[in-house]
Image (cartoon, rainbow over all chains, first blue to last red; front, side, top):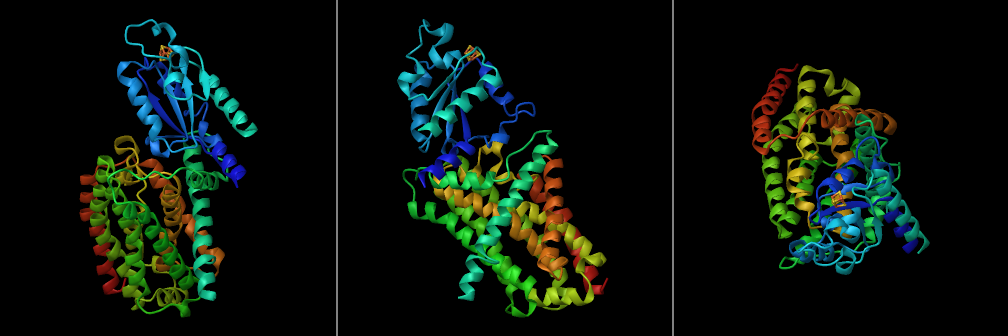
Length: 141
Length: 302
Ligand code: SF4
């Protein structure tokens, strides 16, 4: 039974896009994944607007004083089992903002992060590769 | 025993669910092809549903958990019963009971009402907005829908789906008359709104109010909501098949259902979403006028 649900989960990932004060470039690249050239829907992935429908949260940007609390709140509202993917160097480790006055702490110290996709911004190919690696890791247990 | 078989397997729950899933797959695939994308795999609706069964169910704070969790199941059971009545009428026209047309019309509003109850029970401003839009939409399309159903009733002088079907099998489809064509046009537009797909997907307008009434749902109740939608996509157009152009065999009926599905998908992909006031005005003037004309034509016998 659990195996069946895991298979269904990896075949139908609903993605929620949480912008945690990015520069907006990563967000545009995420939207690129849905365009005809990359078409994530052929893997069953769709972008949803409500965190309650999400299986994966894509976080972009640096957590700062205002967004750090809120990203935690949003993460807690997501129905489990679910994964978090950090998109872009900002979410992975702060990028060039890591010494900034309002940088709180890296994203993975606030919420658990399952996959990191680096790049500033990462290419859509890189994001797809990140998701594929994550799916493989999930299937392996 | 046969009743249970009818309700649970054929032509009830399982039959409607499977064909509904197939219809929703066709809908997504055709939409993707129109965008020059590849689209989802065939089993996508099954994956979606099974996945949702394994997810956590979250009930919002300060709400009635009973109303919130039971609303999707009301919609599902109503659609199942409609599927049984309509397909029973199509397969063996003598077997239906008097007045089942009226029962079907009432039962078809229950999924929308379940949507409204669930939306208001979600304790979320966007869900309430979606629910109130759904309510306005019901008020706008229900009258033209009833008017267009009146045409087959006048032609066959009966309110039994079985009689309407057997009348058409003997005397030719209602669609072959002027009144029938006009009633069918207004009927398809009302079905578009009943299924709340574009251009009348106002209650769940993704870009404005995210998912409307379903916004707070997760896990199994969300899956039931989706399943109800897929089954509606099968059951409501097949109701139109029954009252406008039934065929003798099951395959013929399914083929005609597929034709209506194609019309619905084409309308969906070629029209942008309208505002709720535009939708109400459209249904209360143009669609009602067409349906009224159809009723008058049917009364004079055209
Ligand atoms: S990683 Fe680069 S592109 Fe992405 S949000 Fe940060 S600065 Fe912008």
